[in-house]
Image (cartoon, rainbow, N blue to C red; front, side, top):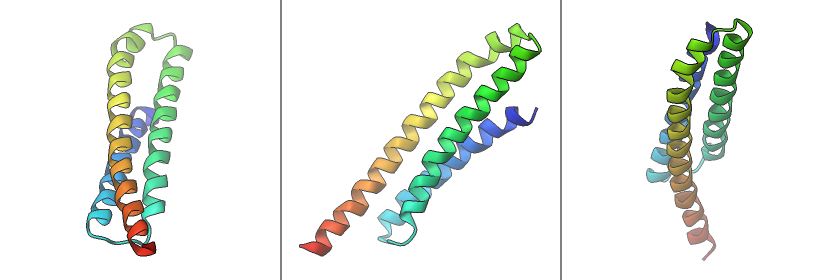
Length: 105
């Protein structure tokens, strides 16, 4: 039951951290952006692992109907979350690296 909630919480956390990183980049705040970048990507990985553990629980209980009902939308949601987080993190990374180039010029 815990894995059922954890993959959703980690997915939301990943989006929040990526959005916070992008917001800090737009506000030109330079401290802590690497932590937010790493945290958002680590949260995506933790969400994937929680989803796999949830599926493993169902396999061990031989609940095939739960697998057939939940895994296709879960895979779609996980893919969308990963793409969203990567785009937000890439935008923040480009903003931060652009500022570093401005400082050295």
